[in-house]
Length: 75
Image (cartoon, rainbow, N blue to C red; front, side, top):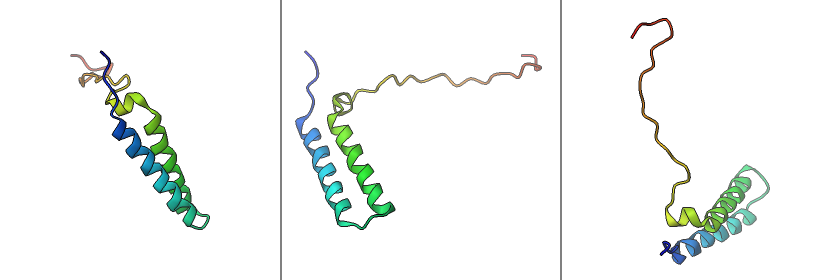
């Protein structure tokens, strides 16, 4: 069975988006207002992203950190 998405998390993100949008509308035009509008859009995008809400990581692979020898150096 597929992992269910927590409905509360989606609603919480949507409420944060609404709050940020309302606060943005209350400000005069400028950089602070733009930041809040971008924040509202980001919250809305997260609320619509089912994989993120479910805790899935998209294509995140860890690479092994090894020291590479420069081409002229002998191992």
